[in-house]
Structures are given as C-alpha cells and as structure tokens.
Image 1 (cartoon, protein in one colour):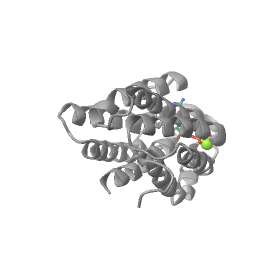
Image 2 (cartoon, helix red, strand yellow):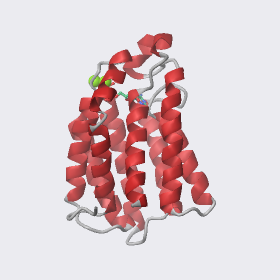
Image 3 (cartoon, helix red, strand yellow):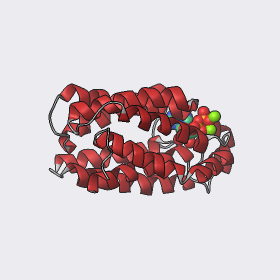
Image 4 (cartoon, protein in one colour):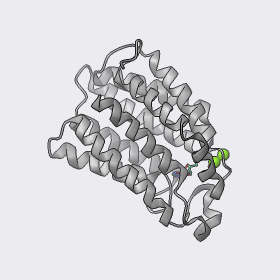
Length: 217
Ligand code: ADP
Ligand code: MG
Ligand code: MG
C-alpha cells in the first residue's frame, strides 16, 4: 500500500524496517556468535529513524524526491544506530541519495541508479577499510551492485534489475556462513566464525529483498 506522506523510497524503507524487525532476534544471535550481539537492536533502531525521516521528505517517486528521502534517511540512520554498521549503512543511503538527488526530476531507472550504487559501494569499502571476502556486509553488497549494474546494462527495468540484485545478495549473505571472519569485531574469532552467516550481510539482504517487494507491488 502506498504511504500517505512519502514516496517510493520512504515506502521501501518502511518495508525494510518491517523485515529487520521480524528478524531482530536472529540478527542479534548471529552477531553474538562473533560480535557483541547488538546488530538486531542497532539496525532496527537505525531503520526506524531512517523510515521516519524519509516520510518527512514529502511525496514523489522521481530521482530527486527519492534522493532527498534517502539523504535524510541515511543521516538519521547513522545518528540513531551507532556501531560500525550504523555508519556504513548511513553512508550507503546518503551516497545513493546524493547520486539520485543530483539527477533531478526524472524517473528512477536501473541505468540511472547503477552509478550511484557503484559509488556507494566504493564509499562503504573506503570508510570501513574493508573489501570483499572478509565476511561482512560487503560480501552481500558487492554482488548486489554487480548484478544491478549487469541487468541495467542489459536494459532491464528497475524492478527486475533490483529483484535480481536482491536475490544475488540473499544467496551471497547465506554463503558468508562458510567464510572465516576477517574484519570488525568478528575478526578475532577467525575460523571459529564459520557455520554462521554474517549479521550485516544478512540484514543487507533482508532490506534489499523488502525493497524489491515494494518495487514489484
Ligand atoms: P558493531 O560491530 O559496532 O557492534 P553491528 O553489530 O551493528 O556493529 O554490525 C556488525 C556488522 O557490520 C558486521 O556483521 C559486518 O557486516 C559489518 N561491519 C563491521 N565492520 C565492518 C567494516 N569495517 N566493513 C564492512 N562491514 C563491516
Ligand atoms: Mg555488533
Ligand atoms: Mg556494537
């Protein structure tokens, strides 16, 4: 159902919030395996603030309107969530938001979105000092971005490209269970982290899938 006071970006963030809320305990348990157990709480708190902020940005589904909503959301998320993932998710949203906002009052297409997602991926790598293969959210974000760009280049509509990207992120998040931890708090666990998926990769896949549902509705 459309939100009364926000555009498609606000609606996607509301759906993402509902998805992480229903997995809050699981995300906390995954983070407790190798980290401090707060990822469920942190991401729910952050997305609550992000979804509320996006709703204040007003209606409209254009790149400009969506970008404005994501800029507000990312700032609110980083402020509210705290932790490593709060800063990284906040930056992810503000980078995508900044790219979309600069495009002006045009429709959001897969082709338009691709460079913003690429730039956001690079920015998140840089801020965290991380790269793929370290059992973090980057292991879900990298295939999300790669699949989105690939489908966009092939001329896929936004909903189809985003959906394929969300499926790739979900598969990749599951596959992090087979990886040893190398980054963040989890790194000191190393090989003992095997067998459990990374919480950040898992939450990213949940959010991307929830947004796909909104784009397909
Ligand atoms: P904190 O580790 O500060 O308690 P969270 O528990 O909310 O933060 O988030 C942990 C998640 O953040 C990890 O599962 C991982 O996916 C991600 N993460 C942590 N540090 C980094 C980093 N340097 N680069 C990329 N992702 C990271
Ligand atoms: Mg934690
Ligand atoms: Mg913490």
